[in-house]
Amino acid sequence: MHDKFSSYEVVAIIAPGSVLASGLYVIFLLPLKHLPTELVGLGELGLIIFLSFALGHLVQALGNLLEKVFWRIFGGWPTNKILKPNQTLLSSDQRKRLVEAVKRDFSLDFDLVSENDWKKTVREIDIRLQGNAAFDKVKQHNQTYGFTRGLASSFLVLAGITFTVQPLQWFPTLLCFLASILAFIRMYRFGMHYGQGLLQAYLNRASSS
Image (tube, rainbow, N blue to C red; front, top):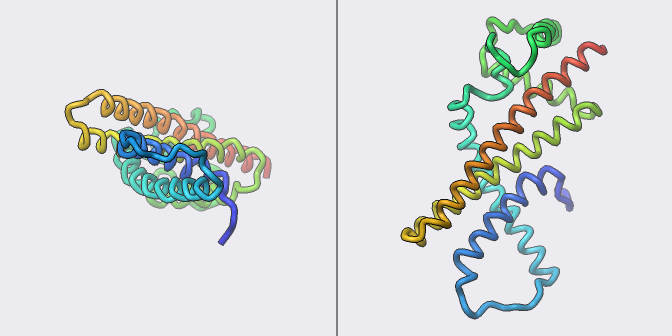
C-alpha cells in the first residue's frame, strides 16, 4: 500500500471521476434548496478526492469495455495496426527495421504472429523501455489516453443519467453526448500517438544496442 497517488491515478482515474462526481452533483444536489454553503474543509476535501477515485475506477471499468468495441470499429488496437502491410503507423523503412528487431529480440515472424501474441510482446517492450528517457513522452501519451478514455465514459454515463432523469430536456443530454464524442476523438489521437511512440522508442533502443 502507498499513501500517495501516482501521476497516472491523478490524471486517468481521479480526474475523470471528479467529472462524474461534479455531474451527479449538478443533476441531483444542486436543485435542492437547502445545501450547506460553507467552504469545504480538509475532511470533506479528502472525502471528495476518494469519492472521485472510486468513481474513476468505475468509469475506467466501463472504459475498458468501450475501448474494445471502439478499436474494433477503427481497425484494431494501435500497436496491432503495425502487423498490416498497409499500415501508416511507421514508415516502410521503420517497419522493416522493426520486423528485424522483433525477430532478433523475440524470435517472432511478423507474417506468422497472431494479434494476441503480438499484444503480449508489446507489453514486454513497454516494460523493457521503462526508465528510458526517450520513453517519458510515450508514458505521457498513455496517461492522456487513459484520461480521455475515462472522460468519454464519464460523459456517456452522464448523458444516460440526464436522459433518464429529464427525458424532455434534451439539451443537457446532447451536451454530455457531444462531450463524450469529443473525448473519444482525443482518445483515438493519443492512442495512436502512444502506439507510434512506443514502437519508435523501441527502434531507437534497438539501433543503439
